Length: 304
Ligand SMILES: [Mn+2]
Image (cartoon, rainbow, N blue to C red; front, side):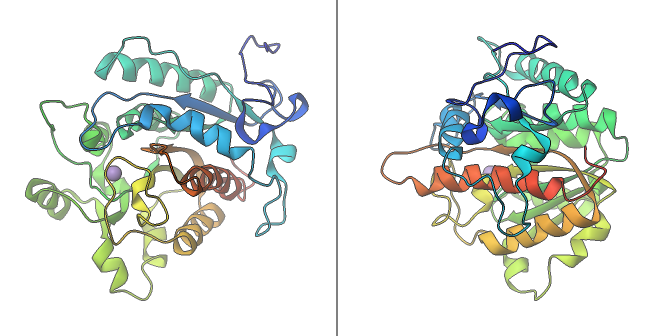
């Protein structure tokens, strides 16, 4: 369907949460979901290109009402779901430019943008767009991997390099990484010397309170980039490169809630979900995570 502003959105049968026109039209919704099924640099298991569709399909089974916050966010603020971003044969810098342009437009319309990947490479585009709107932006990065390689398997646009690209246009001191447990010596050296804050998984397990020290490291406006492999594999087996000793659901929600309450989450993405056969709970988990991110973001009355 087309709205007054000419932006096409997906209807009830295909949109996030499976919600009606009255709460999902572009012009009246504060949230815009942008599916970006980009999959170009696969290093282990593939399938992230099918991630956005699987998350949208599973989201139909997520309750509108959030039992923790006691609110029905979708009816309160509206959630518009855009059709998958057409990237054609574009890859690397060209694809990033298209994603960046799409996000810029949504931000100009004052939407709270939720990008559904796709491989992690895509996140550099919305982060850049958000940084231009919120110059003090900080990034909270959930991942098993540091993603700080300068290049990987010959590509600077590998999913393993996304945060290295982000560090080219933003101060590493404004990035907080959580759940990291797989990286190269060069990445570890960068972490020691660049000013980036990295909470390794083994440090998280050795510390009673790893959550509250994160808050002072973040500026007022926070972008959350969430690689689903940050979760422990039993919770999230459907991702390209699963790593043991991952994050659990309750501690992750605790951190996100605190950030939502004390800061202003201004945008987010959920990436690297690769739907598989056999188990369905990961699809639902990724969809619920997406809705939880929205719910926590709107705890702050200043969002978006
Ligand atoms: Mn990862």
